[in-house]
Image (cartoon, helix red, strand yellow):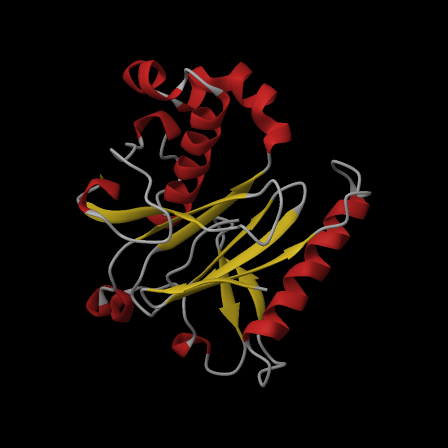
Length: 214
C-alpha cells in the first residue's frame, strides 16, 4: 500500500496480523516477509533488490548497481511494517508506532525527552507518542551512532503530509523536515517521516549508501 508520495519520497506499508506475538521468531519472520513483499511492490521489475545492513545496522538497498540505488528507511510496529525510499543524497528516517506503546513510553520518557521537552511533550499520551516517533525517525536520518535521543530537537509543529518552516529541526548543522504521514487507510497507526533535502556531493563522496536504520 502506497501511503505517501511527495518530495521525492515514497512510503509503502503493509499491516501485520493482529494475532502475531509481541516478540519472538514468529514476529521476526512476519516482519522479514512483509519487507520482502514491500520491496516487490516498490520495485516490481527488480527481483534482485534486497536489503543489506551497514556495520552500524543501517539498512540499504542492494542488488545490481547498488551505488545507484536510492536511500531507504524501514520501521516496524506491532501492527505495521513500512519502508520509505528517497532520492540519492537524501537522509531520511521513518518510525511507526501504535497506541499500545504509550504506557511503556510514559515509564521511559525521561530517557528520550530533555527536561524542557518533557514540559511540552510529556503532558499527554498522544504528544508523548509523537515525540518518540519523531526522535526515532530523526535518529535514523541523522546517521550518527551514539546520538542521544534526548539531544534531538523537536519541531514547533507536526504538519500532516507537508513541509512547513515550523516543522523543521537541525542536527549537527543539517536541517531536517518533520511531518506526520497520513495513515487514514490504516487503523491505530502513527508514522513520522524525517528527511533532509538531497545533497548530491555528499552522496557521491560517501563510502556507504546513504540510508537509515530500522
